[in-house]
Image (cartoon, rainbow, N blue to C red; front, side, top):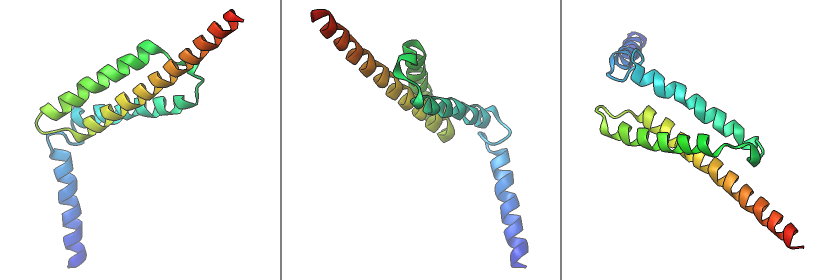
Length: 117
């Protein structure tokens, strides 16, 4: 009896997730879920040398992430998956930009010092 109640509860929760306005059968679930792939790729790129980082790409990811974070807070119902994927994307891209900028400043200082010698 108790096992049957548990099964019914699990099935009802799955149906609720499936039929939710941002549930499994909607683009509002799958788009941000796949966007996590950008975060995974950008995180993996932390191993890249800073000179290989692209300013335009990372800047576009920061801006896009910021715009979509704002959007995810305005739409009803709120899409927390969209919010988290884009907040992560903007944060990781900002870290990458900082790495690139730091590398470029150090490289430039070294080149300037070498010219003065």
